[in-house]
Length: 253
Image (cartoon, rainbow, N blue to C red; front, side):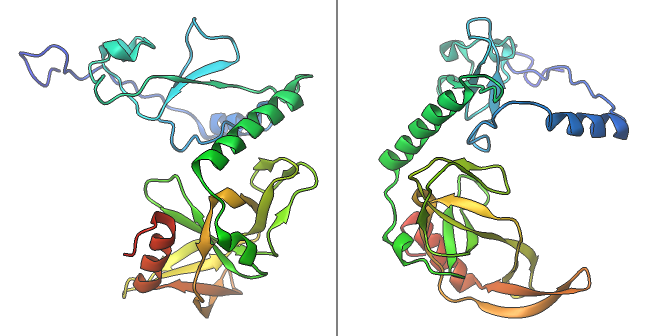
């Protein structure tokens, strides 16, 4: 079905739907635990991933924006022939690391150090990192379009890792890297007056110091119930939200 009869470039392609049984989904999820590959970093920003004969077997072509025009749908890595070339970026390349490979640890460490070096060049460590104490609410920059920041309740002061560390979410950070360990505060509900109520979680997350924007002002707390157990809720009022957004963006909102 063509959208514009006079323009053959703009048309709706065929769309196929596949039905998967619940048992198929379960088997697939279980199989993921057996895959010996390192998770790609920054996938929230990547909207197009493809393979191509010009790439090595362990390489992927990626870009932040996706296009399904006729040329791109044929997996053409030349962005200059894309119908939306003025808006599309060139494809980048990412390496898939096999954790069972003999060189995996060395390659993984080199890749991680390169990524952290990029972080150092793009972001400067906030002075607030050195003022973090136990139970402080730390403001974390986000690459998510819908959430400009995350909050983490610190377990202790920032520390420099003595050895490779993997947190409960699978994030791995190398030795000699400054991190803050803590728990994410997750939104439980939103009140009628526009406040967000957040609850403390139990999994331990390690946050790179280069992702930290600052420390939240003191938050009002209240008691709640979840699964018949008492929990502590942290309130983010519209005024506090503006302050936190200012810490992340650098603007007074």
